[in-house]
Image 1 (tube, helix red, strand yellow):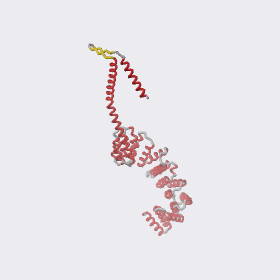
Image 2: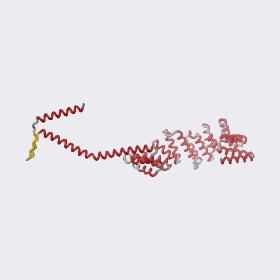
Image 3: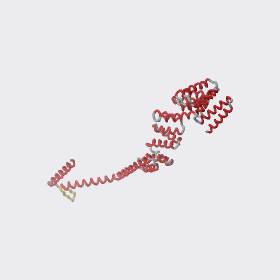
Image 4: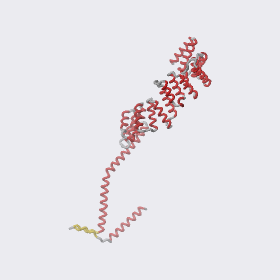
Length: 398
């Protein structure tokens, strides 16, 4: 409808101009001595219109010509950007498909586009790392160093790749740079945790685990395991004296101190320094909450002196445990060992023979035969003692 109206208006205008031109007898005179030019008014108007369109066409052509280099450059940039985007998508696809060589080549093509150069370099670095091309990996990472917008991405990539390469010290150097950059997001903390774990920096591992736990960013089983490993390493440090060992132990949260794995390593550490009273207290507190026969071996090692009230209390406690856990060979061995220490020969022999009949491993067989040999030796039964010593030696070989 709009086109029809425009055509109608155009025809009306043309008819109007034709009528006006027919009845218009005016002239236009151009006088420049000694020259004179006479033109009809109609011809002058037509000439003026044509001249206007000619000048407009010339100016338009000049303007288009002036803009042409910019348009050509923009076209080339757009074409390069499209090629770069296609190459970047190709490199990502190849990387996730495990075609790392193709991924690096595609990333190299994508890096020709300035907008994609940084991300393409990070993809190429990861692909080179997967192919164990560390020099090319480091070269790619170096190309991104000047791009501040990708600094965090570069550092995170470097930490991840160095941890994977088992270079925790270098990874920790990058972690320091990342921390100086003010980055504290969850994945950065996870990467720092891995680096410190590989470097056996257990105090920092504990700090990071607690931070991640507050943000519910670690699986509970993984969190528990990491804390156990950290406590184990801190407790077994040979440089710990009695005071420092107690300080470390009481710095462990109460809910962790009573867990069997932590209590076992804590008791072993105290036993190694002759602090048997502390070891017994740790084990008894843990066993009161949850039974775990792994704690019985350090409980035997923490036996009090012969005839002491503490040793009699240990025997009494083991007898109470036996009522709740009959048939446990580790418990029978522990009770027999404590009775042997107290010179309760009959009870010691009964429990040790029960442990021998239920023994479930070479280590236990070796220890039971050794205790039975010591028992018979104390009773003057030389043949029985020698037999058990021989069987202890055989169990050692197994």
